Image 1 (cartoon, rainbow, N blue to C red):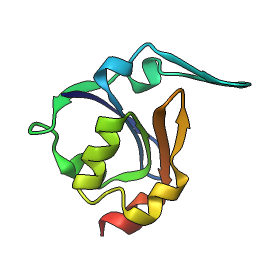
Image 2: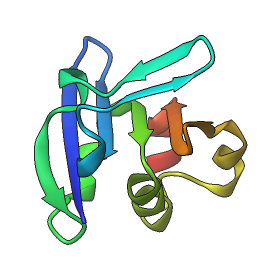
Image 3: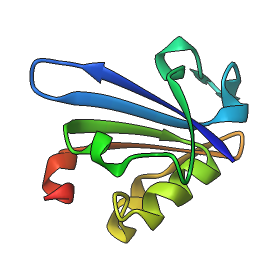
Image 4: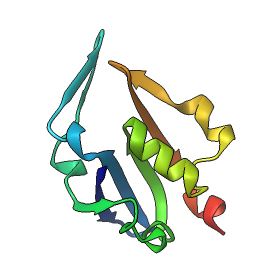
Length: 106
């Protein structure tokens, strides 16, 4: 499984996106909600073994899209059980946006 990880630098920390590779370019719709997985998510390609967890240390926000990406961040302890209530599904694809990530990682 491959993941796309993009790091967006801000003045207060990084906004990191991670999505299942095969979802890139998709448009997910649910009623009036439309979610386009576009260039905002197109970053470096990693496998689970290649992904350095240290890239998440400067994150203030993480956007997670896809079953495998969500599972990976759960396995790494970044997404915790208490976060799962915030997962939303659009066309069966899980989407989670985590805020205040630095509190989780330290």
